[in-house]
Length: 555
Ligand code: G6P
Image (cartoon, rainbow, N blue to C red; front, top):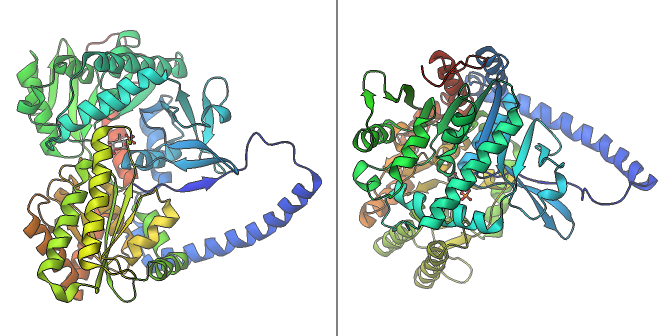
């Protein structure tokens, strides 16, 4: 969810003159001093946090493991959404990190492994910074890997990404009572885009051996196209969203083709066992195949596909360290002042503005709480950060309107001009902007109706270094399996969710700290580098990576 934003100079501006250079040298000196100060503070914080941070798997550990496991094989990550977008602004080209858990989590992996990342170029200045093959080194200022952008026809992209991926596969897999639209031309656009991704991956790889890490539901058919041309490739798909039960999946007209696409992978990963089991059940129902329940694998037409679970987590150490820096506490105080929160307790929600996230349900529960507990009015402030998302789909537009309306109603009922009951912030916040909100919040509410994992829950826990926060968590998130010390409540049950928020606000500090400590252990012991390392380790252990082309498709 976190999206650090960087400002870079306009890459198209003219040559630098002398005054520019001298200014730059002056800046360089202060920059060095600032970096030294920052490094010292970080060291002190690292020491203060002790083994909680130092025992965690690091980016260097992952880099070493990748070299050991993969030998010469090249790592290619492919996803619909690019990790960084170059956008035009009045002051030049600006780089922003894409919202959503996938982009931020995989960015850490790409940085550590130096993988090549292939994704659609979609922002208005994306082309301007790339070479003729669509490549640009990222992140800006600290270039660690190559992002190769794929240019799609706007018409195709509209049908494939907006209409098919987000209007069909997304509601189908989340089962949240938003009807998926099954429209044949959109499906054909999806097929076409998957072919184009395969093409880009193959041209990037050349004749070298490779491990392709496909990410998410946008690329469900890519492995078939790859396999047809390069049977030797090792292909892993990580499905970041839920996999529905077989009854729901049966309504999907192109179910067999999608399953064939996934079974062209050597390994398919999910966040939790429930989704992996749903997947196996679906394959058993739809395709003639042999399901090996012992090894959790599917054999079909002489090929074997392993199915495994890898619960994803953020870079917890990085978040904990940031949250213990003085700027984070200062930022929290600034938010308190700017929003005139006084000494109110703070409840926080951070989400993409998506109907799966349960934002209206959360506001309704909070309203119920204030209705029944007048003593809380004016003493609690709710901050909802809602990052605009998929804004050209009607379902998302009407959600935005609903959230605005619910906010206005709540403020009419229980807020005053200088003390709104709820603050709605509808923009994307960067890493440094978001951390202070986590530090500030006494309670975070994650009320997703269905979510593969939900990284916001884990980010909040990672940021609570003082143990002074409570998490209210929907049982329908993957995160709820691991964070069993959160206060769990169903977003479909307004009273129960209201009671959970009330309980979180009044939790005894010792109990709150005990729960937070337990959750922090979970998040620290399973960070993003562990996630990637386990996938790479399995790719080797299950003999998926040979380091050299394999003779044929069957094993
Ligand atoms: C979810 C999906 C990701 C997606 C992200 C943001 O986390 O699993 O694949 O990138 O939402 O959505 P967007 O449509 O903006 O890429």
